[in-house]
Image (cartoon, rainbow, N blue to C red; front, side):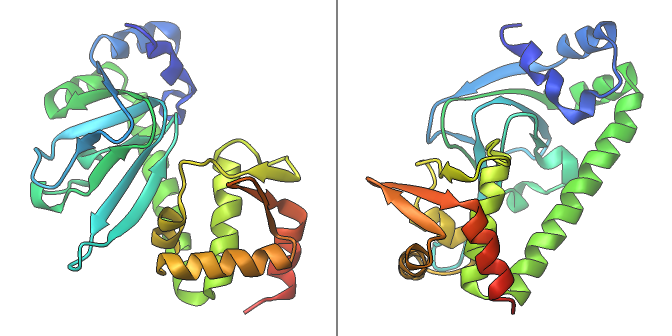
Length: 229
């Protein structure tokens, strides 16, 4: 299957030999999505698992006022979908492609064959779910116990790490992340993010290159250490 080998970097496949991977790849189904397309939404059948090969996917829910609340941004190598957490149809979030996305997916029957083919995946999947649960709990703690400026800086650094910029002293925020997206991630309105970015510019934490936002890692860490809650 085209591009399936891209998924070999996924942690779920740690320790599997090529023969086992080939068996797994015969079970999954490849799907492609254009930027802005939805992989699933509330009311869809809650019986699928997705493995992300290429691109990024955001999951979000809508408040009673119709405001988008981003739950997670998934990157290549991530797994997501209702089979991981047993969501009912009505409890599914929206899942939207941020750019050109390639995933392999399985329904429940295929997933059972998947697990029977490679029982070692059970432990890998458990570890994956545990790691994401811990990360989600940490994000919630940050959201509750830190001020908005800290949440924004921490979010920018986290995005840089996830985009492979963990060693760079300065990195450019991917333009697909708008101020509205950042606002949703840290639980404020867009105008607050605009104000905070202006404040961070004056502190040297971020700068502008045209319309693009540049994050300066050393200044960001210094800001966090000097302005502890």
